[in-house]
Each structure stands twice: as structure tokens, then as C-alpha cells.
Image (cartoon, rainbow, N blue to C red; front, side):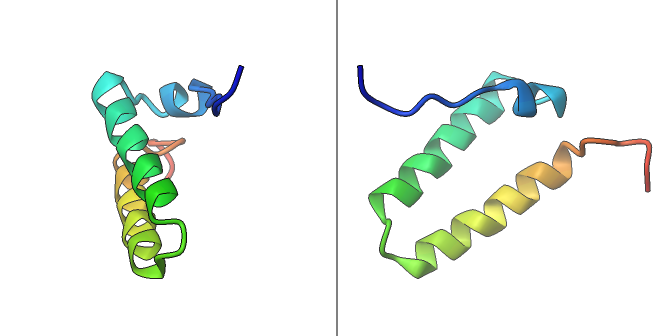
Length: 62
């Protein structure tokens, strides 16, 4: 077999569902398709931070 296996426990622990999985897959695709483009990588990094901020690991801790 070939490909990348990505575990979902870290995502589901945060409360992410199918819509977020699609977003994450798209972000991974953008980085892999633009592996040498620092601008794309920086943009995706910012989008990841925004997504993660919507699903904190410990929502009760401020």
C-alpha cells in the first residue's frame, strides 16, 4: 500500500467532525501541492491556528 495514514483521535478529541476533516484534508493537499512555496505554507499555518482556536483541547481553561 501507499499513501499517508492520518489518525483522527487528536481531531475528534477537540470535537471536530466531518466538515473539519474535509478542511484539514484540503489544507494538507494545499501544502503538499505547494511544498516549496513559503507563502502557501504560511497561509495554511495561519488557517490551522484559526481552526484549532475554534476547537481548544481544554475549553474550560482560560
